[in-house]
Length: 373
Image (tube, rainbow, N blue to C red):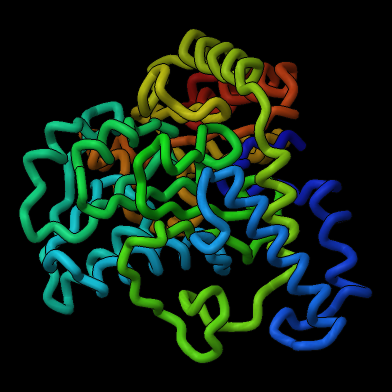
């Protein structure tokens, strides 16, 4: 099997598992307990928080552990908007993850006004589009750092500068491990990250919220996480998240080269194939296409029968009969959007595996169209 669906989830790394193991076995304390067993858990949790803060260029007190990217997005959108120091107007882009879009829709149902920004055909928000949407009562802007379906990278620092003193949140779930997450350089006041996209376990995430940004917690009851997210902390997974984030860096140059070679091979060999997303400002390990006149799901079935595992888009929308909201927002009609196939991979993916996937893709498309390979 060749696994090319790392945007959906990555395997748990051995380094992360080994770092977590003591807190899944002998170091089992509750970090809120005031005795030596609890103190050991508290020290591990504090160190994980400090290490993550260092990667983000933040203060440890600005880091909240959550259950993953979806909770982090919900907490950021609702928590900042409900604090509402400025007004009841929220801005998001049209290609956000459903966790952002549906959180904004929920705010709309309780009296907020939501502006959804258009993107261009490459899935990018123009700074002037954001500037035109800002109002004196805008209380939050949320724009994804890198898109989970097509891989396009947004000019977050430029967009945050346009937002000025309006709190700016970015969903960095796909960007983590690839792009610079320094919140000061980016100019953002809130950021969401998910562990299982970078070699940590499922069920752990991080929310950064700048200390000066008003925030209303969504979960109450114990006062953990500086009052921002009550509930007994998942110490083992927090340690795993910290370990994964610190080790996920490294130069992406080799991965970019592999990506570009793969894209060129697919476009050259598969009749009618079209790259989706920005041609260069895209995640290093992301290549996404549409194949007009075919069925994306049928291609996936053919590829899996050949040992190639990939996806049609967001794992959170798997099984939906609706075309990708990302692609339709980018201007693709619904019929073409339903032919999408996404290949996502990491630094360890071998060029030979990508070349094999390209060859199998040629055969899969030929089989689906009945034209032979």
